[in-house]
Length: 331
Image (tube, rainbow, N blue to C red; front, side, top):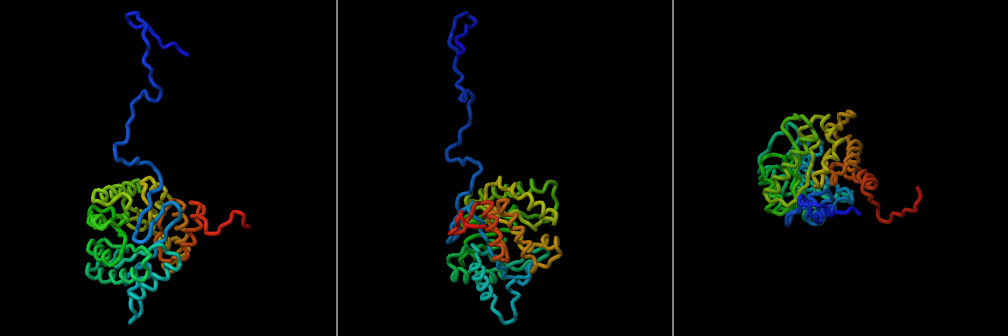
């Protein structure tokens, strides 16, 4: 061992202070009550009657468009003359749950490019009766409401909804965030832009979403109630959308559950020149890619096909196995 007794300038031999190894340099400690801020699976989230445990499998959200002008051609206000749109929506909701949907997303105003805005009263008139009917008939199913209107959100929550889905979650207006905070419900913050103008797509999507998360926290929404959505098809060109899907795993750094909505989107249709009602397989392909990149929720029109696609991806990505699975079974 090295002799640590060294003579000083006065010639007196003194013991040299021990540096203490790793303790030689002071380091920071977490302040009281601070989060470690490190990667890890998000804590479980309660959405109405269900508790979502992230990282075990992908949750499938079925889309119910109570509109006459949905881009995907599934608007429930387009039912034949004399039919009841509420009954049609309920029947579709029940079918989706039977096919494996974990939750339902009800929207009463189209968000497709070039859509015509409708009065808030009309949106409430479309959404609230459907939410109420589903809440009564399917009490175990979480209901999300796709809206940008605080008044619609308030009315839908009073009717039995459990979650808000904001397609302008990155906007400066925090009114919908405050509704979520006041009612103690989760909110999906989606990326969007008025124009598809970017210098660095993924960096800007990431930055915009983080600012939205920060605003939501300032508005009183708990960290555990925040879900992010990169906004596939919103404020992005087809090339942007494909790059977004290719780089989706970069959003894991935000440490929030990730919702992906590629279902029947025009980018997928352009790839193979397919109309909306023939985009089931291409949507399923994007679902698999999304799950492998870490998507926690997929929002889809065609539930059965995407549940099956997601489960195969879950088996590879998350180690999911069906009940009764045996490792000794044959090929």
